[in-house]
Length: 188
Image (cartoon, rainbow, N blue to C red; front, top):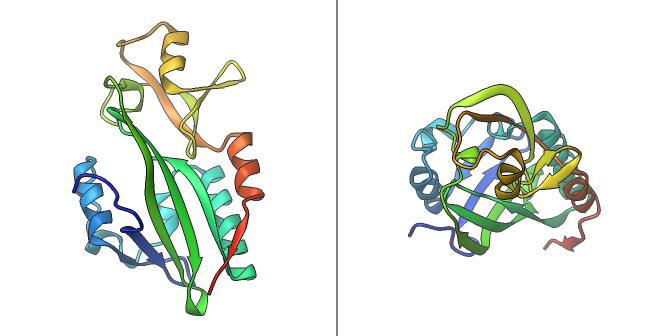
């Protein structure tokens, strides 16, 4: 398979925000993207928050989940799911289920191959000083500007150089505003 298929990459959480199910395509994507430790046995029953990096990102998801549950609506959020060799533009649809459960469907919108980008390679050597990266759009903050990772590397004049700055997961103002004002789709 190799990629998300429309509405096939799915996981679900219960009312206590514990992962209650993951789809086979979700598991295959994890294996194919250097995360073979993310097996069904390793994730089901654990809190969703164990798998979301960065306090700002967790806070954003908590707020959106609250809206999904309180208003009984589905919310669609765009996000990036990049690897060192690919840019992937995705949509995440959060849909309420019975008894406070929520279903998450990840769908690929567009994909572009790129030269290997070491700055987002989880195995690349890192400097201790963190560089803020938006967990939603994958842009990085350099001198108060949000740049694509490729542009940030050029700005640092370190194309191909190692070690890279460590990455600190945050949410940029544009992505936060979008999520806070995302149009809800009536469920049911």
